[in-house]
Length: 477
Ligand SMILES: *Cc1c(COP(=O)(O)O)cnc(C)c1O
Picture 1 (cartoon, protein in one colour):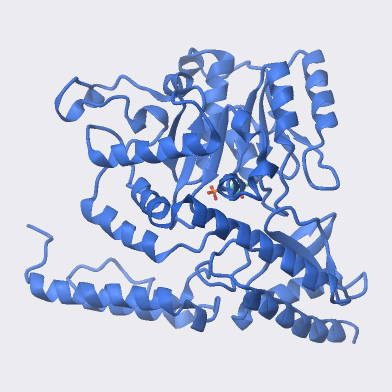
Picture 2 (picture 1 turned 135 degrees about the vertical axis):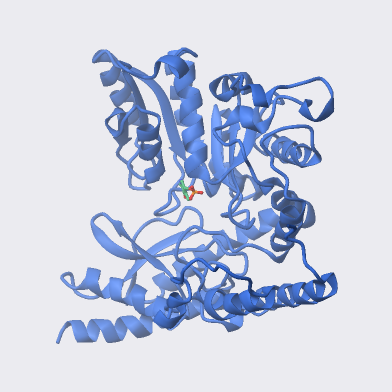
């Protein structure tokens, strides 16, 4: 019972309409609200029982156009400032269509899609100046990439027997900063090492890891008989975009013989931008780097990546001798090692294709300029804040994230700024988020989308002043 169309001519016409609708969406994004609340009636279209009978693709498409497309998360829109999320591109969208049509499983075997993934790996090595023996692969995102790095480091520290024996009785401890992403602690949990074995090192005034405290903490742990093994430096913290002193961390890791991992989820691709790359100095000394092509790289979700300097150690952490994964010198079982030897996923989609298209069509220079532009817009926003007495900058701007607030008495400021964020989001004009800096709730604008311009930043400022004035006035009533 085939699932192919009965009538390819009709199917082709309907497919062209779907393609046109998505190209229209991409072309006219700016005319839409950034985000809008989902009407209850639309939600109810997605709480129905399992369909027992057929519908046409045209009917399903109509449901998508009416109920899904207008109520997305907003990150494609130039007025989206909420979180560090990429905007996607029409090129990436079309590549996804090709990837889905070919429908390869990139777990293994001798097939060109894996050759494409290895090509991207080679470009990644080149970008970070890693040797040809470095290994890497696409994963969902940096959360998974950080976990893989931690597992490779764990296997190195405890030896390959840990895979059989588990971690019982180990004394491993790891280090990161208080500004690190929560997935680093989660990785400790998933790796069986536990949150309590992760030291959260305080940050300096610039929100980077305090290197002196890192050294003292390692020394204290050694004195207590523990086994330090892993340091994660962050290149672009999620709250304010701070970059840890990667050179200093690399020195300490080398001296102490610890694994030096970089969580560069969004910041690592700053290597493409001439004015950002110097801030990442030391990243090329890492033992492993986790990052996302779907953030600053603008590749459609999802496209995380893990790069490991010691490919043999990486292989030794994940390779398994299962009979159905048997290798050969010829035929489809050739070209080992396979991606499934480097991570927990066996079935894997063709994330490499949308990334290959993005890097090929735009080229590294243009992508680098786009990244520089987002940082330039962040400095522009910083200047606009400085020029408005109602607004206050709340953290230094290192890359492309600006934390600020509307001034409104000390008691009400938190609630007023939370209201401003929600007012902005519901207005559809601009969508910043909020975070907490030094215990104070602040507005946070992450400029990641390649479509964002000065006019979008101006609109954010204007609307913040408008909602701020009215919220602050009523808060004093
Ligand atoms: C986004 C982010 C992560 C998590 O990455 P995912 O791709 O969402 O899994 C981790 N660390 C930092 C610094 C991030 O910005």
